[in-house]
Length: 199
Length: 89
Image 1 (cartoon, chains in turn orange, green):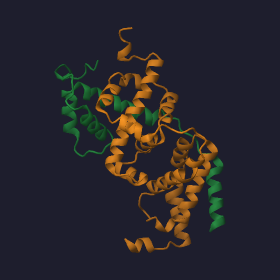
Image 2 (cartoon, rainbow over the protein chains, first blue to last red):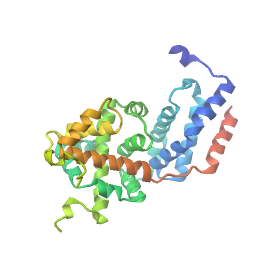
Image 3 (cartoon, rainbow over the protein chains, first blue to last red):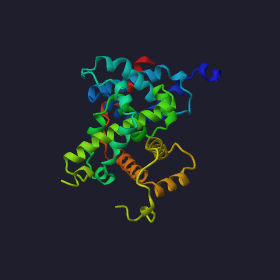
Image 4 (cartoon, rainbow over the protein chains, first blue to last red):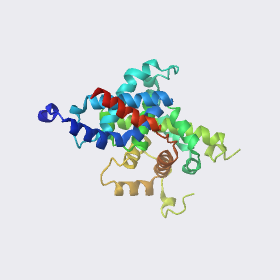
């Protein structure tokens, strides 16, 4: 292990890793950055910063391991350290408060009973995207990583620097929040929900 | 609703522990539970809330995957990155 960490790649090896293992993920990286910043220029800066850091620290990347997860971790940390600070967005709902609230079993059950799979299937892309984008950043992030990018819980734990158990529970809460949003759209659009059956 | 399921008439209408069951179902959908087929089959056959939750969660994952807006990477981004790398080499 320590031999790997001390290893220095030659210039040629660096180029091979960068072009062969890092650059193919630029599409996912840009989309992740866009969904964090909601701004094209910020997303571009964030992706560029991430790739420059990846190049600078390329010796700490072990060739053939999960480059995508490694890059996502750098991007997430860059976002937290730099972009989040200068973000013009108003303060979000306190994360801990939201997390505690949605940990309640009652909320858990009620929130899922009156949204139907059929209603969700009929929704358009904008409604889905808006619902996702309206979630607080920590919840949005786990859904992006899991459902849009297909990372495993273990990979997500490494990207986010949190235990796997926290990944699982945060995802569960994030999905409940997402369902609340989707339920709002379903009712607004007149999709069939149980609450409206008697009206 | 869901008449294609032979056992639908026998499903219990209240789940004993939705919190635990729903988290398990979600982990199964996320591909995190090994050999989950039997457990899943039994849960969906016997419990109406679990059955509904599973299909709702599945639908949400499908629409997230297929319908979420994808943003096209600006053409100049990859070139810009390569150029910056050349400068620091």
